[in-house]
Length: 518
Image (cartoon, rainbow, N blue to C red; front, side, top):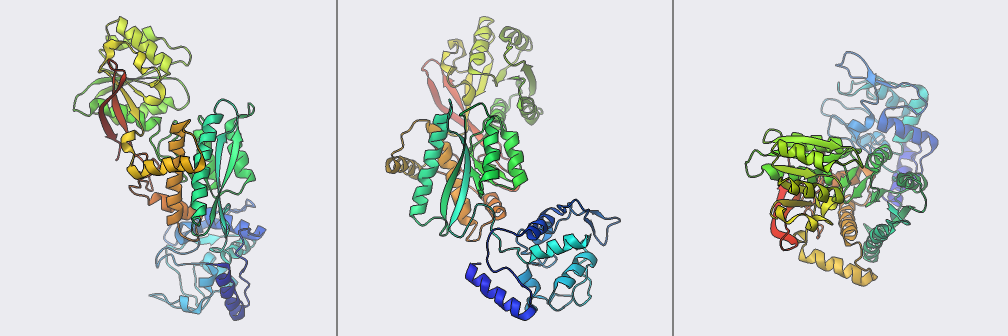
């Protein structure tokens, strides 16, 4: 609703009830309204006072945090069907909005709203639906909640105004990774500039806010914390925080801040607010393991990996995925203490058919060399991110036995996607250095922009999340099609597995897309 329409509605309600509904539409809540929003969305009082909820058919009250108002009445009080009607103040005080199948009543006021919340009675004394919880809530908290109900649906989420949408990103701006950060930033800013020149998103211009790191030894994740605390951003886009995926997930969940990124190094389907367009190392490893059993064989497979954060769970998940179709063993080793000879000897003795290797490229090459000396030549598989730089240095005896996984390949490019990517570089004078990072940023930006368009003219973070969850088979132009869902946060559920032609020094034209769809 526009500010003018909201002001008109406010005057009507004020004349009929002498109840003031804010007319500004500003995104700043008063202290009472902010406290009330916390109660509405989380079922908790900021004062620490206990709020409990009791459903009529239940045996005992429970914490209201299990049954917050948001759960049934929606992000903006819009309601979800007849059993959970709209409860924003404009509806509550509308004389025409209170005829229900089994009952009718007059308009609400502050006193009758409080009675409905506590006792489950409408203004005429009729009982509300049995599924409506009865809340035990202090007078101070009730006043805050009612103050927020008078504003719900009119306030704007952080980072959005009538004229702009502020999008944040956290990137290396100094140090050895600065080139990657610069490439990502240039591509995002170029796309934003083109969108703004065409009128923006429903009339709002896109603004990019960058949180930089790398100038000193400060952990990169601190830049993300500083950005979120300092700048009111509506969402995060294509942030590059390698090694800090769990911390980032916790931050965006705490702040209810949508984050669209190309991939995370070690993540699977994340929390409610994270969306990744491409397969991570987790999915790529799953695809490699799946490829060993894809033709119906029952191979003996080993997953070799360093004992570092996240890899144990990764290897366990990959092993469990195909355990019924093959024998899979996890072979961990201590970081910086790789015993190539010992591991090769053990795997040879166990007659291992295939090795999925998750160590460094140098360790991969060392393992293959030692195995070749023992005339032990299993199929070798690795994510391209780890092994691509050394793969053509492997012993020639492994020709035809080496496979790499990729989240995206040139075969995923559409003609229009390539043209748009090249025109972007031409219009904004961008070179092609760090091209993989550029493609990743190009893809994530297109996904976010499409979701923002579909979120409508009055977007909130919640409607953006819903819009992303509803994305099906969206083609970004340079990567596989992207689909999300309520339980799916990896857009392309699968990876390409390519055979390496060591004799010719190239990747073989033969490739397989290993789908990981449920």
